[in-house]
Image (tube, rainbow, N blue to C red; front, top):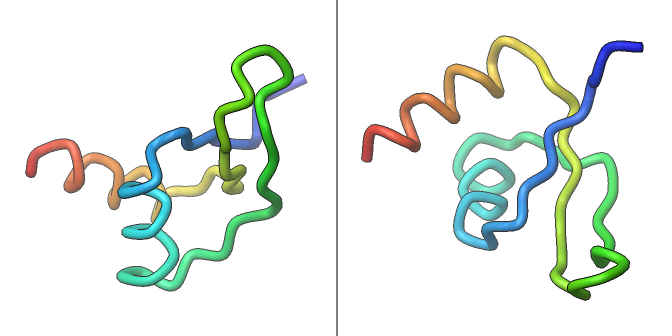
Length: 57
């Protein structure tokens, strides 16, 4: 089964995706061991493009 979700543990990146680019996350939760919050986004070409640009900056 192909992994169709991208998990974000960086609050700044999650906000960038959501508020700067209007990408809705599927859900949010806490990692079972670390209790760090994560946001789950559906993978697609637009998400990939934004992530590449974010990494450059």
